[in-house]
Image (tube, rainbow, N blue to C red):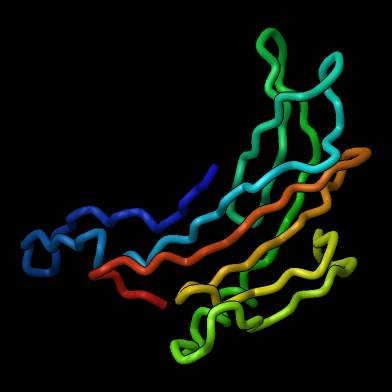
Length: 158
């Protein structure tokens, strides 16, 4: 499952002279941040023998739920992750680096939900970050995700 987030398009609005000025989507778009949910590991059981989890991604928060057909969905934990280091890496000029070069490493700490070191890697001309997030507010579970920036032709870029 991949989720892509991007800013919304502005609507037309009249300027001081009363004319309508239209701003296109591409003029305001920086690009797309693809968030790929790779897998859940050791997730809490919320149904009789297993769970049917899904992920809700919000700005600054990632939450895992168990889908129930006949009752309210059960929360299966939550995790937060920062993208500042990833954005900083994107702003570097790395076009000459060989594929597979580790650009940055982020260590697990009390200030993040990382369960292991996260590496930002220059891979085949793309900046990739793999994260393994320890779920909070639940007895067990981790979610593995991958970040990838997508430049769009005609967008501002970073």
